[in-house]
Length: 143
Image (cartoon, rainbow, N blue to C red; front, side):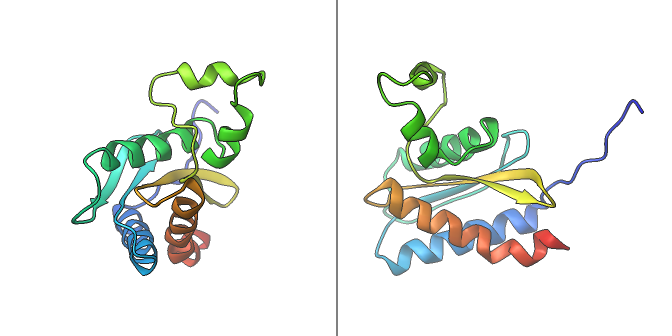
């Protein structure tokens, strides 16, 4: 066959994930931006909390893009691209954001998008919020 069917994330699911991640970060007292990109890495939904830094929308989007592009959570990429590692050169690729907070979104064994969070005090805290965003749509993804 010359074509292949793919699953795509709806805008409603993307917005639901963004809102859930934002709510999780607010519980921790963090002012963040959250972005969801589709399977191609194109922005689908984004929100920046009132006092999140000016850099956070772009960083959140780039974390989501990085997770989708490399099909890997950015926390894992942070380890794999440390100086002296074979993949360290990836850090010089434009938009690659090798710090925690970017997670691929999977459905039925395929990546359908990515979520990125920026603004919490650490990549680990950003990760917790991103994973809460995915958890909020998990049932929707499995249908």
